[in-house]
Length: 453
Image (cartoon, rainbow, N blue to C red; front, side, top):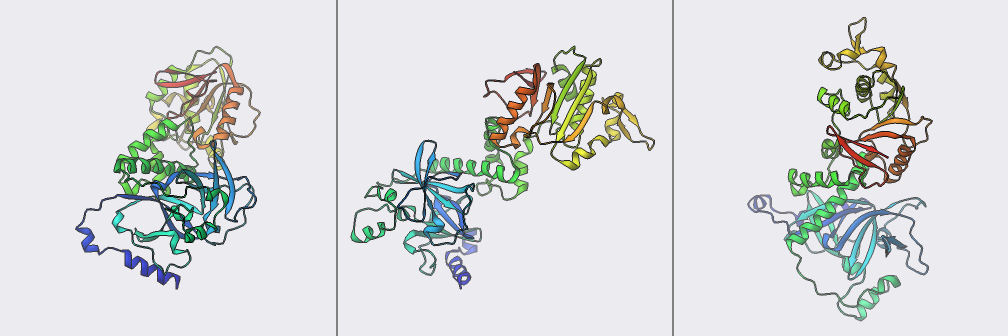
């Protein structure tokens, strides 16, 4: 029966296709879409301050069951409301360490955190396409619904946040009864609704863009384990602005893992998973500092299949020909790191700058000679775990830090600082920076940015 109702509603709210093709759709209303128990809902974007993940809420006694407690959001104490419980939707038992999906909304001058199952994206529509609440949609009290929207073959129930949180124009007997459903924290909301002013398109677009950015950053974390931090924030913001130019308004958010990969494609450092061109090898050769030590130790986390490690070994052999060089190449991809030592060099690479460091097998394949292979020690290791490495002269760790969460980034940077010798250098990804970290000092040589303690 429920499916039939939704189909009926979608039919009532859909446009005639022929008429729609003759019209220019003007997006003058944007909404945040989300799900509760598998159904699609939305909130006016102008009511939304931000999205977040949070848990460990502070319990408040003598409140309704749907009030999970309060949360300190950067110094602002906000009540946390579970919409699922509010609408009598079954909720799985919470674990103490669970993080909830929060939509932080503004009602009058008060902010609330609304817990939902899944936050989807920002959707732009024509305001005239919003249909009145339908009485047949019976699983939610119609007084909490401001409209019904059909978009991209999905039916969204547009919630009236002001009604849900008890904001009203004037106190009446009827509205006073409605207020009995809310907690003491909610009853402190003003007794009259502030005068609503028409939001300008510029303001609407600005807020939508901010939320699009927040969604995108969160999606990068979920889909690709890529974490926004001071290390990569400048690149992400720059890439986001280009992304807006590349995509139409309805496709700002990622619709697949392939979209996330496309967004991150420019982030990768040159030749991070391939053999190096001679120009890059020469740049690194010129950038490496003088070192007369007889033993030079190098740490290469995130070595992958070995292309980077072998290429680095060749440059180091050329730069420090008299030194005994040891490279500890590590990765969490067991298959890749296990086969790295057997890396073959294609004919196209064997005739360029790699030639002095190669030999041929009996089958005619090009491989690295003993001088290079003996420099390398490949091992399976998680960079965030303790290791028994000696102090090192060079840390070559490109495009690794950004794929760790912020806490682990700090742990790894502390480990780098502890392991790196006083005259040592750290090289990270081309689109990663440590300029916000006072313990690290940057210098650029031959277009290569290096960090010292």
